[in-house]
Image 1 (cartoon, rainbow, N blue to C red):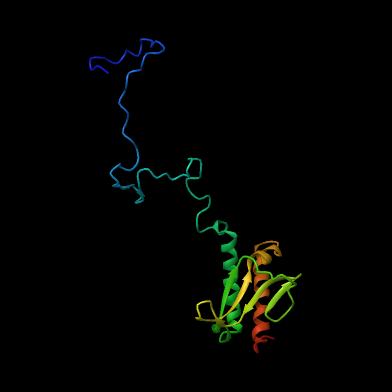
Image 2: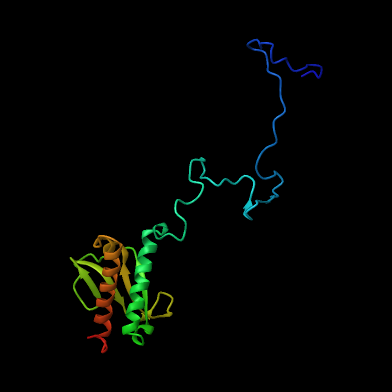
Length: 191
């Protein structure tokens, strides 16, 4: 392209088939091509990095969470269930303080079901043939390390039997109390 060509006047119509004049492109947004990054601090102290969006990939997502972290509804159902289990275990520790030090409590999504029917036993709390909790005695793991006794409560079956959050908390406490009393026996201070 010869150097003496000047860009056309915007008021002059361009004929079809003639090349448009090249205009300089603006600088590219995002991180520099040499791999270095530059961080920018905002007035509130947060750090902005070039090229990173606060929205999702297509730019249509939320800029911030709908609810702040302090609001109870901001927790997921799994987090709400974990809180209910922690409260129930805290209540159980009042009755079985010494005996519960040797037992771990765990939450799992769904129970592993064997090929056949699940039979009632002191190690499993059943409701309609579906395990709600299971006691796992101490033993050795796959690497040969000793494990502690564990009571596993299954979140999905218990949640399916509760109508609301208050009912869920009561059901978790009842199921865990039944499992602990089956494993350890009735405490002496309960009337």
